[in-house]
Amino acid sequence: MPIAEGFSARLRPLLKDLVAAYGTPFHIYDAAGIVDTYRGMTDAFQGEPYRQYFAVKALPNPHILSLLLAEGSGLDCASPVELELAGSLGAGPGDTVFTSNNTAREEYELALKSGALITLDDRSFLAKADPLPDTVAFRVSPHGLSAGSRLMGDARATKFGVPAEQLADAYRDARARGVRRFGIHGMICANELDVDRAARAATDVIELGARVAADTGIELDYVNVGGGLGIPYRTQERPFDFRRYADAILAARRRCFPRSAPRILMECGRYVTGPHGVLVTTVINRCSKGRELVGVDASMSALMRPGFYGAHHHITLPFAEGRALSPYDVVGSLCENMDKFAIDRPLPDPREGDVLLVHDTGAHGHAMGFTYNGRLRPAELLLTRDGDVVEIRRAETYDDYVSTVPARPGPVLPRAPHA
Image (cartoon, rainbow, N blue to C red; front, side, top):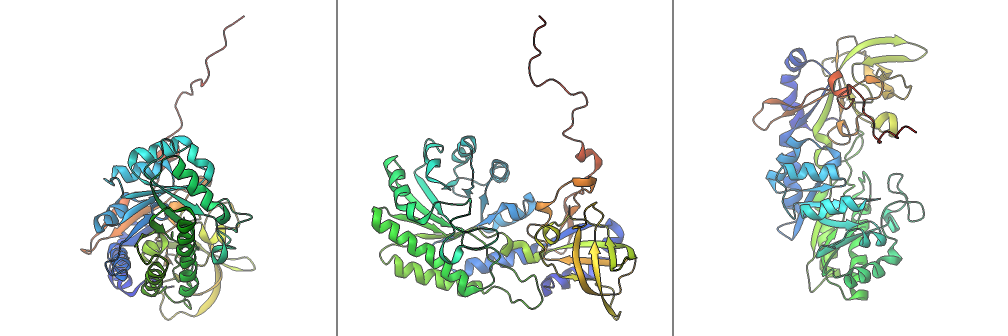
């Protein structure tokens, strides 16, 4: 849907001068909107034991992560590089969770060294996270309301988590190996906008945790309901009611754990930053090939969701008021026909040189970029809370493209001796 009114009001007066001075394409993020969303999440839990860990994969820019760390957020990491990034920003023990899958032994060693809370994705990983930390959580496979998502799969087809029927034995195994404190993790949904459905899925994880605790005699230190909360990409969709979601979670925790209060953890990414970013491009071509095509100076390398997932992103031409609407395909320059930001999208008569905005790119945008075809990733800018625009990542160049290529390739194996 259109970017937030506050972001639009802050950005629009700067946009023409910014495009003229800096050029396009670029992503620009709104610091005020990101901080306000994070604070709203914290306020919704009314001082109850709770912490949000931002999913680094959504927007792994150090300046955005530092902004959130300063607000009290933790960081949700899923790879060694993300752990290293978190550490470089000063995230200390307890400030990170390591929620990975198909994880190598060396990755657990790094996570343990960093002091991250460890989420195990399979019982067999108990032997790989050695020595085990004092606190361990298991992620439960998608089940019940959380099953069936294209992104998460269901219990028969997913690669994520421990099947629910194996959870109790997994915790018994962990306790036998010396673990003394426990959590449970459930990645319950993906881009979910239905508050009731999300609340029921989170409640399911809380109830499952209570049953496992009763069956095994363990005490849960925390329940991590993951992320997956949605944002309204389409104009007819309504924003997610986070306060109602938080109320449902707190009610379920009080009901299921009347004598204790395990902390509630979350790992939201898209919900925090997604609506607070926009991809700014320029129209460079108009073509008619049985369809009306609008070519812009960005490609899937800047935002792959529309081409890869068929995902919808709202598109506007902010300085084309009063022009007649007609359907257009908005395309990039990759040698791939899927390199399209929109198909048959009603737009106001785009013309070469027009600024064209692709909305809601604050998560899984630049982060999912690539360098195929030599179409490199654009810059990232930040509209600060003081109203300044700063560059927080420059655009990639040819030098970046070849930076890992040695000038003189060397042998990777010792040369065999001559006979």
